[in-house]
Amino acid sequence: MVSSNGVYVPGPDFSARLARHLGQRRSELPQFDVVELDQLIDSANLTPANWTTMARVLAKNWDHYDGFVVLHGTDTMAFTASAISYMLNGCNKPVILTGSQIPLEQSRTDALDNVITSLILASSSEIAEVCLYFRGNLLRGNRARKLKTSELDAFDSPNAPRLGQGGIDLDLRHDLLLAPGKPDFQIPTFNPRSVAALTLYPGMPAALVEATLALPELKGLIIHSYGAGNAPDADTSLVRVLAQGIGRGIAVLNVSQCLQGRVAQKAYASGAALDRIGVVPGADLTPEAAFAKLHFLLAKGLSGNSLRQALQTPLSGDSKLASVKGND
Image (cartoon, rainbow, N blue to C red; front, side):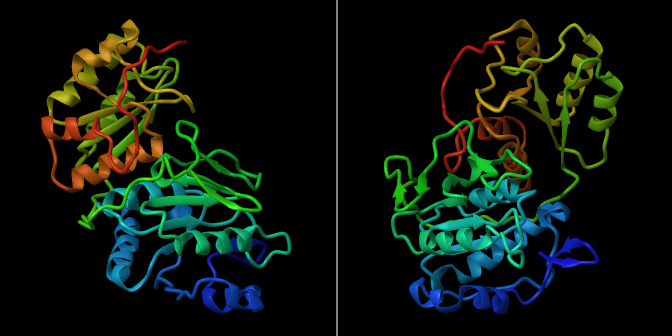
């Protein structure tokens, strides 16, 4: 980003600006090339089509580099990290997403440290997955979330341990890193209207859910539920319209509004009501990973039981298989 008329906007020619800021330090870093996309956007304007564009650039250059750094705005970086982790099936090299809270051109920028460390991580033969690096924390891409708006340590993975720490030394958790795979990339064309998301709130009208489920081209709905996957089962109208949507073939995926923990739909009666009508429990998927995963599986053509099973199967380390009781 660069400043323009008092606000930040995407700025072109990043390669020259980065070279100027790196100065003599560039000789101490792995050799790298900068590929700048034709259309630069504020990440708040991201759509699933941008996931396809980025993944295709990575796939096109896969055999020519030891690793990759994807520079991305922070607002939707966790969505992209998840989506790319699914598309780069069989990843055998590091792909590190990073960005900054303060733009590169500002005097107190955190961009340079994030980019320099990400370049070093991207040259590591020990990493073979899609990660997000930010302010000293190396996170699995599909487990990462932006948790802070103004602090520099904006990202963490509340439901999974960090994969590494960048302090004086770069310490990797080799016991947690995914093993290298055999590249079998699957980069579909996404329909941005195929998935919607709703956050449950007290007194939510069934008509809102019904209207969402009636959207043309909708194939999947994510509900952000209470606690361990609970919903207002006393609102029989709301439960009924969800059941009707599922009956029409729309997949409904349940993730918790809580930062930590997992969905356990059978733990409480209010969650069991969702289980009975066929809502898919989202385990400990982050909302960002759930959104990207549902989009990805639908774009691959999955539906019905095959889609339901795939949503509940860990993919690229995005969740854990476990059965636990939930607590209020």
